[in-house]
Image 1 (tube, rainbow over the protein chains, first blue to last red):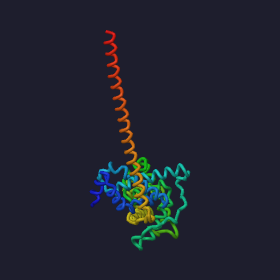
Image 2 (image 1 turned 45 degrees about the horizontal axis):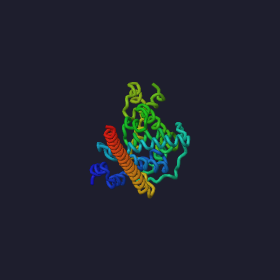
Image 3 (image 1 turned 90 degrees about the vertical axis):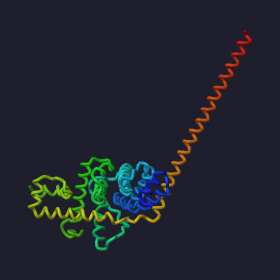
Image 4 (image 1 turned 135 degrees about the vertical axis):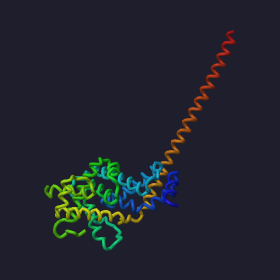
Length: 186
Length: 120
């Protein structure tokens, strides 16, 4: 069955079809959740929440975009909710200063040994960004979402999304291409 | 225009966003800012490479997720069933009450007729 047929079946309540869509998109969705949250534990919660929302809302999905693209938006929204929950419960700092990294949570699969080092460095730098900057730069520069879609899913204005993006890029540039020993490492 | 004024606009310029003629002209003639812009372009290229660099989910997470959906689906179905049953119960109670009311009305009407005959 192709994706369109699976979506149509899932929309009419076919659980097997929906499960197949989950299987086909799971690694991709988990990867996005991992990048947005910056850690494994939150990524697990976010990916489950995202698929639960997708199951509940599959009737509203018209299939105009790919199912995986629809999942990106749901995942972005679920990750934003996760950040807000954490903010309330743990009074996590969302200031624009850097936070400690959970380096143990890395299980990244390399596609190219040549570029693996630079991708690891940039992944680590993304994890170090404050959540609100990280989410915007991941959605725009890694997943190519529009400013409008990002703003909608994160509940912010388009101009706020752009400001966050520019700040995130500036910070990444500082970390990755700083003067001295690390220059031109990526 | 000074380089430090231009530098803050480079993260926007790298997307081709309008940043003003003066800024663009400065970048065209300033090697330092051109190098800085090249770094941002390189950053964007590397970030886009992450798109196909997947994180590996923990073993069992897919199964847990499917089980969570099953729980939610069953919970939803139970709620639908319960609300359906509630509706049926309410209908039955309402119907019984209506029937009882109608019977009572018929009995009262008959007893009134009898009373009138006896009086007549």
